[in-house]
Image 1: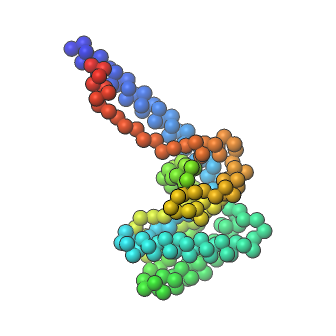
Image 2 (image 1 turned 135 degrees about the vertical axis):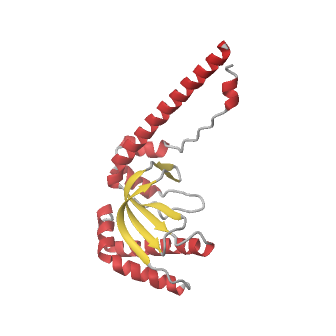
Length: 208
């Protein structure tokens, strides 16, 4: 009976410590997200559906929009979050029309919406950088019904042109991000890793 009581007490204390640790980690990540969000512009492309054709089209539209943005912003003296947002606002209709024309050339008949919004993003890793979950300003591209799996990346500083096979973040983007953030916050993005907790009942049973 005593061993059973000790086991239950140990299990309760262990779970309490785990919950407190996770709560502290969550608060730390939320604080980091709130500090870096004003400097970051995310990119979110929503596919029409999860069909193979729609998912392929999603990636093509992603490349199409990014190429248009890159070409259009070449006239800017200095690329910035504000410059990109201004470009999206001014050229919203033109971007949507061009994307819809491209889609029709591929044999589809989907409408496209390009919006500047604040969106809740999950934790996401790009190469050796992990961005915490949080609410960020974003360029949101919705294709058709927008019910398929999404594409996510960081539009500013640009982490969208990374190698999709090896997920290599360009050093120029790292340098740009480092200049925007405090040293501690930049290092936090580099050092962060998705947390994976494995609970083994056998380990607890050893305490009996």
